[in-house]
Length: 259
Image 1 (cartoon, rainbow, N blue to C red):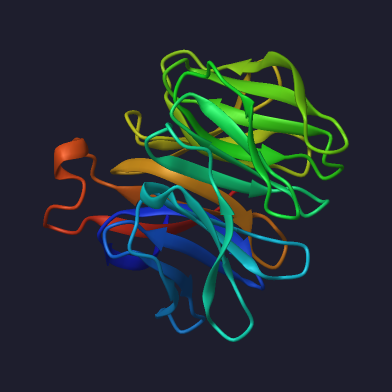
Image 2 (cartoon, one colour):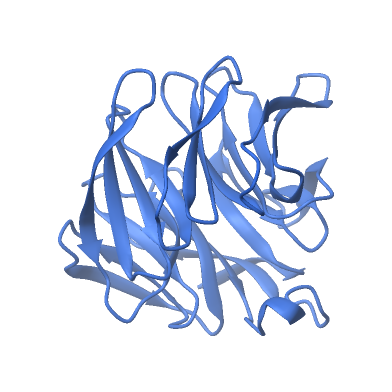
């Protein structure tokens, strides 16, 4: 692996957007884009965590301010406005994924919430075992959710309007705690695994197709690069929830060619 960025406090929510990799540093509350010269551009500051991002079809960025139960939107003038108030009683909301119709899903606790394009939010699914990374298929018809405490990636059908139905195990990944995920062009899923310090690509059903090892826990991953064949990974030494933001800063943004 190549180290693109170092000395992050706690990197998460890796994305490939507008020709470069992005991630969030939960320890500093920063949304960061890596530059071609090996530097970093701080695009936004959100003093709340979890902090996760995705983009609306019109190019505006959404950011989960998890501790504040809000979904924010970055306007062209650089201001952050409230896109949606997230349902109460969840604790900390976490991951976000935007759907082709301009809606979004946000998860936290044991829930997945649907946010309509007008900002209306409602709980769409519950009873999940620590939902983490999410991905939506290109046609918007299927939502995939990594359940970290179940060793499973779960699929839902997405109806027009965003209702979820037909939950089913898309893949069992025994011995793993899948965190951030991304879809491959062949329909496979890459997932980041903290305790096993790796990222794995699995087919539907759970067959392991590829493994990339790291020297620290992998929290999030995204495919990108000019040909879409580079895996970008947020990796950090995991020392427990109480020490998430304690020095030393061990977070890195990594890149590896995966074919």
